[in-house]
Image (tube, rainbow, N blue to C red):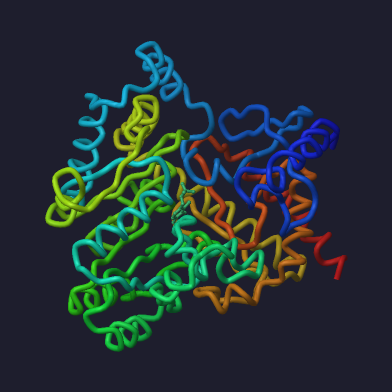
Length: 433
Ligand SMILES: *Cc1c(COP(=O)(O)O)cnc(C)c1O
């Protein structure tokens, strides 16, 4: 594989951008090797500066559920571009987006658009704190909710990959107000809420964690969480920035039937442009400025291009709901089973977790269902596997602790080629140890 141009660009990048990247995991630090610089993408494929083609299972970290460069989204964007790029004033598009979301998702009575998942979770937490008058929040170790100060405590892939439980620059006082419990452990939530009665504003959780690799909730966990938060007057926030519109149109709220007080969205909701959203019960959302006192704002929030991309993608997903999610599920099941069988044949312990089109192959005996079990993964083996797959034209998330994403643009042949590549990669993994 020729990597001349990507290597040249990386050398230039590291001079002027920290680590050469604008988001850490892109730098391949945890898997070794250098990242290809991507020039364009279409359907299921990425093409780098050197002209290499990759079957893409990152999908821009989630948004590209229908594949890259979808013609309907692209054409909607081209039309919107003719009207100008930003007005800083209310638009019809924002009304349509809010109505569309609240109409399709019964748990949303009101919604506010922002520019990223990070903004969505920061803002939802502010609403919870503002509404309850309490400062403490409870989060789950290994759940990532963006890089907001209060949330950057024991947070998912970055923490596990880089071995830093939180970041320098997060004030101790803020971290002290963030109480961390394990995933899938309702008893731990009960203990922490009992011990901090009348002090906890919210419990924020990825109902289907994806930022430690894909973890599945144990039966009854989300129901128990709902019951406990209600009992203690604690706002329940589901962070569906990754799982929303991904595992089902209505995300994990639809799948579990558990209705939180607030939900955060990102990734798919922007159709590949920078968008986030938070919303939920009217009684909470009406406290947001200017209808209420809780301040939250954004110069480019509800941007017309971003709303256009997001709304056009969401409308396709809504229209073809049955077919799209079934196809994603079948393709991803096939990939998961094929990769698992290839690992078994090579004698490599592997645990594949999957919900719909979100999946992770953990290099561990398993089961992997919380922070502690994720830590048992053989990350050196993952690195070997990752590099062998990349070399064969398969672009996986460059960390053991990330989720893979299937898109509806992937073909059976793409999946079959990926399984064949995995067979060779597992042989390499086996021979290196
Ligand atoms: C990606 C992600 C975020 C952060 O979103 P950004 O747009 O990267 O700020 C927050 N929560 C979850 C669950 C995510 O997957």
